[in-house]
Length: 398
Image (cartoon, rainbow, N blue to C red; front, side, top):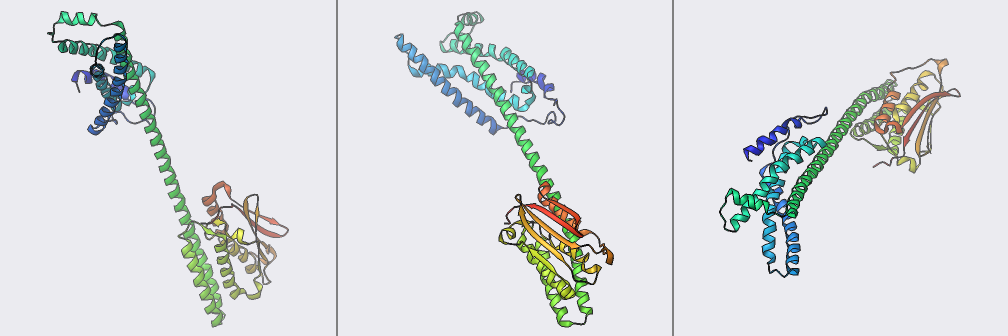
């Protein structure tokens, strides 16, 4: 770049300081590389070549009407020669706006750019055309002759030169603003994507922590059931319990690697769990399941969602008295949601089994992580029964 021009535009360097917090730091922009400049040069040569062809066609038509025998090639060369200065100007402005994007950040800056460019470029452009015309005519370059040539330029030609120069500056300003807007949108989209990815990773870590908390709890309780069967000295029943436990642990471990399972899979897991507990409690264990049809079974839910609630009902029912249980599990679709209700009778007269309270906390956290505000868990007492009700969207399981 010409040192004088570079020094002049360096006066605008302070404008490159970001005005708003969070904007890119000053000096972060760089000059465009050689490949980019070659691409910009090729595009400008093509664009100005098309304009020269159109201008030459207009001039050629006018000469034909006036009976002058100029050739189209001569007119095109004259137009193309005049536009070469505009090509260089466009390439220079592209480099400057890439290096200092703040030059077009505000209207005041754009006005300064217009003024400085016209003051610097327009006289040079006129001198270039005048000098080239004198050399093409074979005349020696003298200051007096150059001033005469300048004075002989038609007013319309002055207007055309000013219009072309202003058009070149305006086009480059518009392109620079468009590029900056596109870059800002891409940066914003990338930031949003990164934030969403980070949020997803955090939610996955929370889910894994919940599952890691629940699985030892479930395994501990299941092993307690097996221990009770072993102490009963009934080897056949104990062996059946171990087989049941193996199937339960297999599902618990495979489900831990999945984000979604179907309600059918969860119900099968609950039934296997109840079959294991049936070996321990015998006829005292009575659980009714209603509404688990094909439509309900195809709905997606987080893994290990229902078993903690069934276990919670069982612990607060059978483990608190010696009578038969009355646990009810009911599914129904209501208002574009799946409602799941689990209830058991209150057994305050027979004592309580508070446990650790992991079942309800884990289920509520799983619902919030999976569905956010679209799902809910409510608990309450209704007609002497403790009731847990879940509501989740009707998302199909993959």
